[in-house]
Image (cartoon, rainbow, N blue to C red):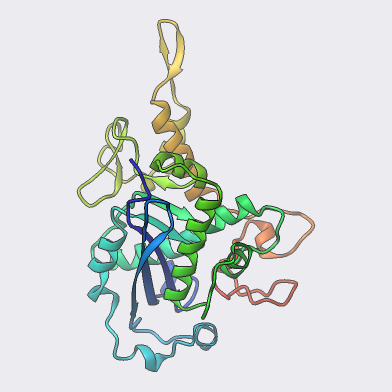
Length: 304
């Protein structure tokens, strides 16, 4: 499957805090759809954005960062009103986000509240991972840092539409500079991104788009509920007449390896000589503790 003719959807959320599993809510969500021409350049952009009423107060520090106040969202809809639109934009698309797990966690929780599931897009690409890969000698990997290195314009950072648009442009520019082949699997390999599981194998998707087990003890259940079983599947062997062989196809084991790497390992590098949260395998996006340079790590989704 070719990817350059598919909708490329870069998305971003602004939230009341950093804890999606402890009551924080989305206050703004944006998705910018990019369409490329035959040369892989941007032909058209379609921005979609919504302010949302979280039904809880917006902390002052969030207002300082985003500029969004309680008054701004008081008469706005709740997530329920736009849930299907957001899900439809992401389904069947190449999706991009800067620190993808952060936005994924918030959107997944909001979707669950209205009895919907994550749509499992054709690709889930994190521009933080791309920044770490292509600029590994650099210290800063915030969206602003990546934009500066790629000469991508970012006006009004920390508003969802602006961040989403800049994030998408960064991905497209990196793909252009690296002459990424117009093949979906090749692009997934280059970006170390998660896509749909192979059509023939032990994993599949259900009617709602979730990746589930096709066979075995957890048949019909989401793979996200059983990461240890996935890890076993990646290593499982069975005896054959000519010796031991892999129990599952290489294409499936490659998908599992990438899923476990992206979903399970995180990016933090542990260091016994430092007391910064990120050096003790605590992602800097989930702590309010200032870094040594005085930057408030609650300035959401920074990766240093």
